[in-house]
Amino acid sequence: MDRGSILLLCSLCLCVSAAMAEEATNHSGVYNVEKYGARGDGKHDDTKAFAAAWVAACADSGSPTFEIPRRIYLVGPLRLVGPCSNTGTFTLKVHGVVKASTDMSLFKTQEWILFAYLKYLKVTGTGTFDGQGAAAWPLNQCHFQKMCKLLPVSFKFAFMENTRVEGITSLNPKFFHVALLNNTNFRIQRVTLTAPQDSPNTDGIHLEGCTGVKILQCKIGTGDDCISVGQGNTDVYINGILCGPGHGISVGSLGRYPDEKDVNGLVVTGCTLTNTTNGIRIKSWQASPLVTSARNMTFDNVIAYNVANPIIIDQNYCPYKNGCPQLWPSGVKLSNIKFNNFRGTSTTPVAVKLQCSARYPCKKIKIQDINLSYKGEEPAVSACANVMKASYKGKQVPPPCQ
Ligand SMILES: *[C@@H]1O[C@H](CO)[C@@H](O)[C@H](O)[C@H]1NC(C)=O
Ligand SMILES: *[C@@H]1O[C@H](CO)[C@@H](O)[C@H](O)[C@H]1NC(C)=O
Ligand SMILES: *[C@@H]1O[C@H](CO)[C@@H](O)[C@H](O)[C@H]1NC(C)=O
Ligand SMILES: *[C@@H]1O[C@H](CO)[C@@H](O)[C@H](O)[C@H]1NC(C)=O
Image 1 (cartoon, rainbow, N blue to C red):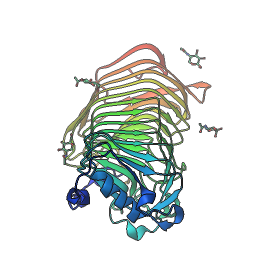
Image 2 (cartoon, helix red, strand yellow):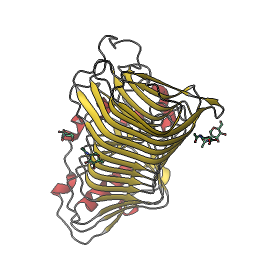
Image 3 (tube, protein in one colour):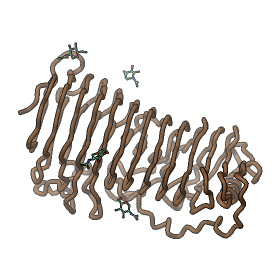
Image 4 (cartoon, helix red, strand yellow):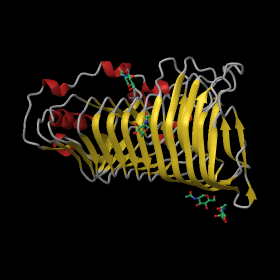
């Protein structure tokens, strides 16, 4: 599906932090949304109170805490945009339930909650952000046509430095749960992301243009990719993810837009995928407008139960039947990719599928200790195209193609 365009940030440029005009205070205060007028009855729109608490917290030059108590708050789009004055950690603590408005006319931009240009933000607590997506899902056409209006993601983090997100739950987003754009040093851990299996484009965590991302111990069951690592990411570490239902953990889709950057340095380790359409998938579009690369990636200690395509490289990605010239293969160069210690069951006979680009065959693929059966009974098979220099070690079930 269409990912790059969600990250267009034109609207951001217009953002001016109201807080900059405020006089800075330095008392590491607690900014409780109820003190700024939030009613927390789940019916009245509390957006203004949240925005006012934000402006005050943003002016605090110590270590402010923005606090959302244990009630139910209804809020429309929130733009929590810096730079803020904090010199220490800026904590956003959520205990209650924050529900997104279902009035789509309020959403002029592509996110419900936008965090941007902040340093040392920590989002924590046991609270839930409910995107109330069910009413919006029928409006989404992006999963079957190229030209479509993008619905708002529940969270966008853009141009952030040193961010931690932990503990929270995201429920039923209108579009993605979490989009990360151009962040450095971002860690998200122990979050729960939940949406129905058939909800359209409810990707768990999508990232682009980020450096130094850790995604740890998350439980993700949703309608699209649990995690998708898009273009321009460097040094991404993913560990301890439980994924399912969903479309698995993906790199891509890559090679669709002319301004894309390389992917370099990804480790996915200790993850379990259950009842997903893919396990680990690397996908790139046919007919890429320019040549990029995705390299230095390790997928290690992965369990895939009841998964349609446990290991799949698909460089012929073209979800909308037309507009992909067959004779112009993907310009994304894949190299130095290791799959180590996979086990589980495939629901299709082809458990390992490596369909690389005819223009740039995959290089330096290493496959070691794989044990994937077809439905737990019959032997599965491998299928490959345009794979150069693959090496195989240890257990190989299914047997390699070459
Ligand atoms: C976003 O990150 C990418 C990759 O790190 C970088 O090339 C690009 O210039 C950044 N974009 C902006 C608008 O900062
Ligand atoms: C490969 O990726 C790892 C993990 O992100 C990183 O530490 C290493 O520097 C990368 N190596 C190269 C050659 O880019
Ligand atoms: C996977 O699907 C099976 C059969 O439909 C179901 O019994 C099981 O609970 C599912 N497991 C998970 C973790 O979703
Ligand atoms: C593969 O896994 C199956 C089921 O867990 C096990 O019975 C079998 O011995 C394993 N095969 C190899 C070669 O390790």
